[in-house]
Image (tube, rainbow, N blue to C red; front, side):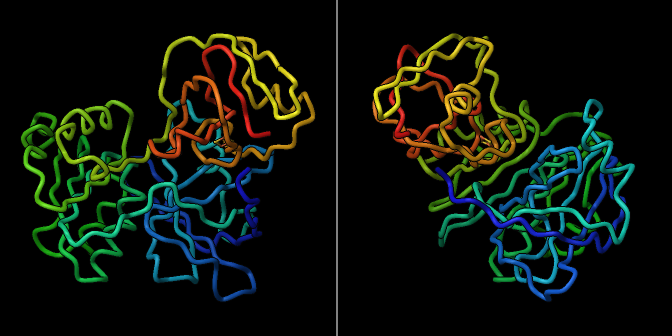
Length: 313
Ligand code: FES
């Protein structure tokens, strides 16, 4: 099970609108000058008054521990994002978790390419800040329909060294960028990080299939859609076998059986409910485990299995 995360009561220190119906929110601790450190790509959990929990990437400066900065896009169908836009006020106190990073930057001497669309710019922005602070060259490709709909564009333009920011605005080009051409030739030792809506990320993944293994990293906002769920069975270490119906999750079944597991997003995005598996055929539906971790770890809030899967619980 993943370690419990510190939850702090943080004060909303500043609010400002940015492009694409997005609200930039700055949190500070009401008494302490420093918050727990974070690395580029990290996110925090925001705990809402109705008990819902949402993950937001930190887009501020990792070197500035006095504040956490997130950006919340008002989603058309998003009751939570709508509530936050309508109700957040400076001075409010909200429970915010310590940061966790499922999208860390890898050590490399090679060039770094950052690719983001829309609100996917948030983790990429903190990466650009860190690379800029280290004086390391990078290329950031930012895709949006227009300047007005591109969150945090002013921040990017202020911090990116000349020549490093490549804007792909459909209002100017009349077309989506040709990702295949843009990402055709990976330089030696190159690392690429991308984030954005599901269709965009699928397009980046298709355009980078020929890149060396382990050189392309991503973070998604939604778990992958792998078709209608099928029933399967969990086997626990004490020998119990727990059937999971098509309309249930493994997490629900484990809870009902009294197995203690933490959970936060219940969407396969935060990693809180992670556990181990030792035998069976898992069907991974999460967006947090690395390909390597999938050979031994399992995310029961979304992942399923074929037949029987033995869990380390
Ligand atoms: S509760 Fe977030 S990944 Fe399972």
